[in-house]
Image 1: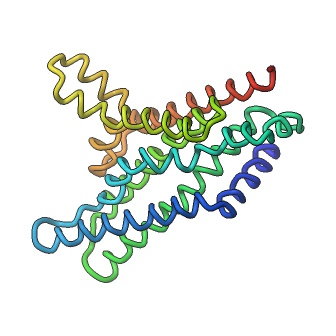
Image 2: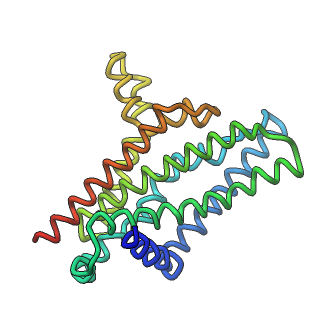
Length: 242
């Protein structure tokens, strides 16, 4: 745990001292603000406000935000030659990967918590939203984000090029996002169910996004995180051997 904590503090400090995370944060908060304003406008004239508007928007936005947060995590260490120094330090491969993952997930969590201010504005100034629905949606998108970040870490650990890492992460996340949509038009029921089971949206849009928390969906996202971090650890271990 001490080794993970050391890596975690080091990586989290980098998120607050580098330019790219601030660009990501600015874009993140600007786009979520626009999404909230748009949903609020529709709620005045068309329909009730959607408590899951921000999490639903982020399900798509994470296709781009997660790779930007993670593309430098390991790839930059390799490119600059600092990975060799890190590997010679008294720290395990698992600690390196988990520390970097937790730092990125913590940074994402802080940004997500800022968007909770929209819910409080609705509670205190406008109307009483369904807070149970909103809480479920935020729990879901928090886990969704963790899975997306873990995939980003995985690709960052398997290449030295940040752009390639971001491209591979984004492409994979698009596939996971579109899987359930493709399943809706596939004539084969078994294949459609398989695509839904494997997709991120299949475990978010029909449960968390509508205010339902199911054990199978929690297990799915946790499983994706564990699997991606396992592959990341093996990639770092391979570099240590080489």
